[in-house]
Image 1 (cartoon, helix red, strand yellow):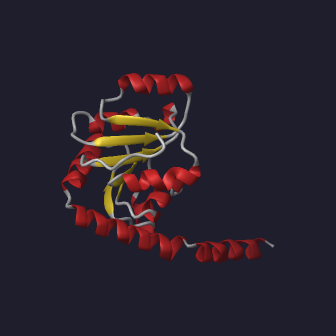
Image 2 (tube, one colour):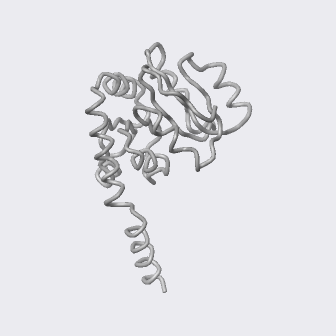
Length: 178
C-alpha cells in the first residue's frame, strides 16, 4: 500500500518494531470499538506479527516495514501520531512525526516531557484507559486545533533538533572527549 488516499475517518499512526517487549496489544485494547482508523507500521518477529494480526481489531491496517524515505507520507496521512512506549531516549519516530507537524499522544515520564514538551496528550506508561481517553479526546479536537498543535511540534523540532544545532552539540561532545 504505497499511497493511501485521505479518508474522512480520524486516523492515528503508530510506528513500532512488532516484538513482544513492545506490548502492542495495549494499543489494541485502547482502540477497540472506537470509530477511528489506525495505521500500524513496523516489521518484527514473524510469529508475533501473525498473533497480532489475529488479535487486531478491524480498524487496524498493518503496513509492515516501510522504508525511511517513504515514512513522511504515512505520518502526513494520519491526523495524530501515537508513541505507545515511554520515550526516555526520544524515539526517532516521535521526532519524525513532530517534524511532519503531527500532534502527539505519548507515554512519557515527567523528565522526558520536560525535555521535549510536545503538543498533544502525554499519558502514563502502560495506562490503557489513559491512552484510550487521549485518543477519544484527540478525535474530538477540531481539525484547526490539531493543525496548530502540529505546527507547534514542528517548531520545537526546528528549534531543538535542526541539523545545525545537532552538529554543534555533537562537535561540542567530540571536543570534550578529545
